[in-house]
Image 1: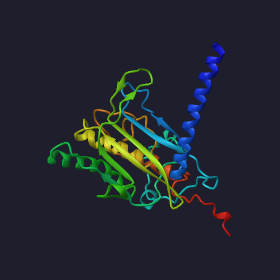
Image 2: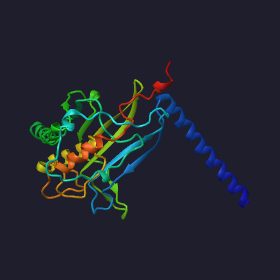
Image 3: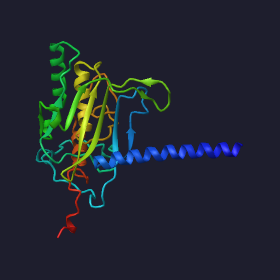
Length: 271
């Protein structure tokens, strides 16, 4: 009886898994985009209270989409660090599609006006976010748009989901979260970012959080180990502005190969 029971349980599990796989495969085929699984990354996992978490989707790409670099944006190409401050490029993580660089400019940014607070506070929040965002416009062309559907990066005043720390089962609050999603349009692979900023962030900390998360959304998919950089892995009492090391890192990222922004069609096979 024990073996029969085990076989029944095993067959039930196999049937359940098969049904879910068939359903998922039908969904993926219907959307034209194969999503394998969701991966959550966090280089803040070793801090006492994780501050910044970013996640990504993994998709299946055709062999013709081998990563290659785009030309440097002119504004970033002109950047020269006279202080020789170095960078933290080694801390930047590549993804399944290469580095997360933008190839079409200006990058379109939508800041969603908060609705749960009075108008004066809502405008102050939007102004603080835009201050942190526009600091990056010296190095990459940006434009603020009024329609969320055309945005490349959307910023929302919303508490990120709680995170379970690797060394504890206690859920902890986060001050911000940056995520991206991949899509294929007109045979081009593209991405879009969403940034969540906790309502608890105000004043200089709101500006710093926007500055930091926007650095992720521009392609710095990692953190600096130095407090003097905007992409330092945790919040500090006196947030730093964008540093030479931040820009050195950003420039190196944009010199790297990516599948983003390139055609997924193998032109060499077209007669």
